[in-house]
Amino acid sequence: MLIFLGACLLAAVVHSLHADETAAQKANDFLKKAKDTLSKGDTKEAIELAGQAIARDPKDPQGYLFRGVVHESMQRHGEAIQDFDKAIELNPKMAEAYDRRGSEHFKLGHIQESIKDFDKFLELRPAAKPGHWKRGISLYYAGRFEDGRKQFEGYQTVDSNDVENAVWRFLCMARESGVDKARSDMLKIGKDPRVPLMQVYDLYRGQAKPEDVLEAVRQGQPNESEQKLRSFYAHLYLGLYAEVIGDKKKALEHLKAAEDLPIGGYMRDVARVHRAMLEKK
Image 1 (cartoon, one colour):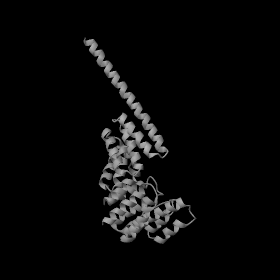
Image 2 (cartoon, helix red, strand yellow):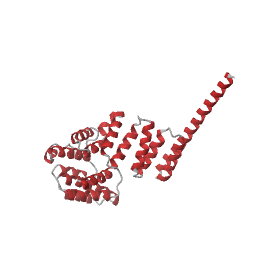
Image 3 (cartoon, one colour):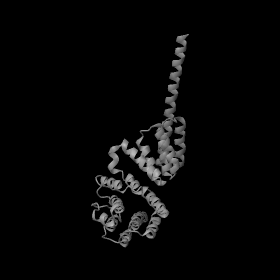
Image 4 (cartoon, helix red, strand yellow):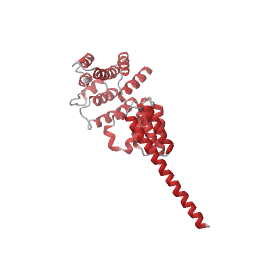
């Protein structure tokens, strides 16, 4: 009798393990289809397939992570955070989920939450710290200007030709020590090929005017796409500059112009978040 019961128990365990393996395999298949679908730009189908993957293996954090990425691409920040929350609950050491959740928190204006997530990400992946410019931006908006300055100084070891990095360090220093001090100690930049960022660099170090930045946008007969991208950078950094020298009205005008341009990417969210915070002051 005991032998029979033992055999039955073993059979049940084997059956359960086989069922779990089958469910996991089906979940992986749906997740692979979801990734292929997203690569083709079909976010709606990718969301549905990710949901099917999660339904078949709800304990796998990868399904939630991927669905969060799709929500992220659709600007559904709250839904993305919920999925990243679940991924982290299932795997507290999933570094990517913290990093992505930090970005989504920033986009919703949750500055402290973004810093907390970025710090956790860097705790898990310390080698990524010098290049984590997003953390530097969040530190700026948190009023942690010295920490922000240090973050951007670290990024200089990753890319010494990035005008944006020099500008954000300038902004941190200007808040700490004033515009003149920030200008006198501005990071040295090589050659940033993006127009009009070298003119932006000259503006911030006091060797150009806002009109020079706008004029550079029009030079060389850029196509429509390039013109919009140039205009975005011009208005974003003219807006940040106007604010730091005390012209709130002009800052809001430029930030609104930057936000209205159909440019994707994190810096457009920066323009939106900055304008919203400035309007509340």
